[in-house]
Image (cartoon, protein in one colour):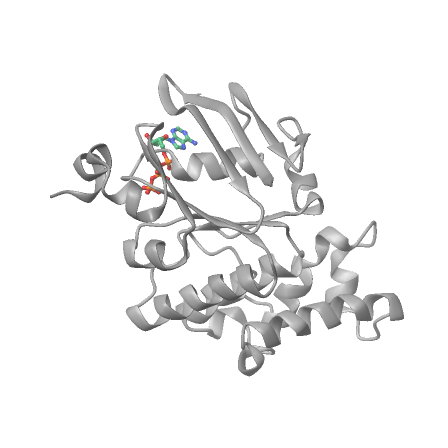
Length: 252
Ligand code: ATP
């Protein structure tokens, strides 16, 4: 069953076709990974799905609904969450406070700071805290729960960003280079988290990633881009042995 579909999407930046007629469909429950050389258009695809950019052509379909014109602030509430290549957290807030901000999509009209900083939380807000605590347990972040982000090692920040995205209870999770800046051991941990997110939480994952061992370990299907166009699509081994992908990206 298809959860998300990009149908012939395209966008230009000052004459450069950053994404040029890209189509793909993501099945519910799979890890779908986009690979390709620098400048291939991978992050731009993410920014189109997050609705940060408007496509000049094409349609985005999520759960059978056309979301091409949905404004960015409504995307999380619909069930799409993301992490960023450069971590975007509130550095002078604690891990728990950052995760409560991740609950923002479920907050209705109350201001977010009321939930995060109010000393006496209302009963209705306890549910948000419970959800955040559950995510803290799921990703083994108990040790860092009350630590300010600014005092965390880089690898832990990456996991907190993942946690914050999970707090919005997404159906589709977009991970932009989850292994960037991580050492080998942290990358292995990240592979475990991604597999647990898929298998235990049943969340569908769309990932952009350069580390091919991580790609192979967690991906069900892979899409290779180059110059904004699709080079190949298929299982990780099919895509990696595709002559065009070898020539443009993997070398050899
Ligand atoms: P990387 O692996 O380096 O992150 P990428 O595959 O994510 O690369 P994009 O960042 O999507 O590539 O960039 C695709 C092309 O679009 C590049 O030529 C880039 O310079 C250009 N581009 C991306 N965003 C913008 C923008 N906001 N304004 C102008 N050009 C842009």
